[in-house]
Image (cartoon, rainbow, N blue to C red; front, side, top):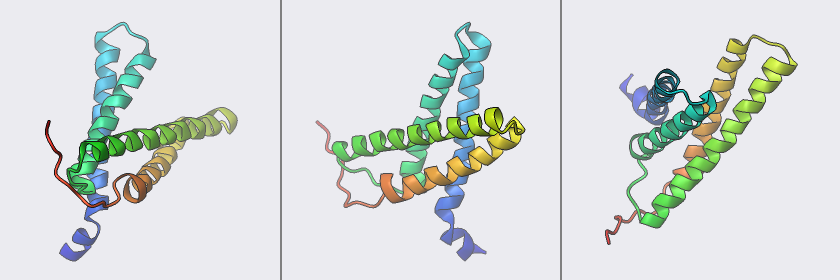
Length: 142
């Protein structure tokens, strides 16, 4: 059992921190929805940014163990992470539109299927592109 956990450690951690990211997203959205009179789309955008930042740092440090490298490498990873998360956000919007608006399927079922697809695609982007192992160097302070 320990070998199975060790072999799949990155996937397990990705799912655990994915739950945390989801809680942050919903919590931030709920805060703005409850305590402000702002349009729900503003709360959605702020919640998305907060949850993507949480996902970035948890994925960088614990899931993919992407060591602290140069500042340039850090900003490249951060920019790449946001870029690919934005792609999957648009993918999510399209899946929901097709499933709910065009096919008239149950919105909850479409959302569940959508989340499964998006989580898998985000993992692949993170593993193969964003946090691929590079030669690490300590971040130099100014």
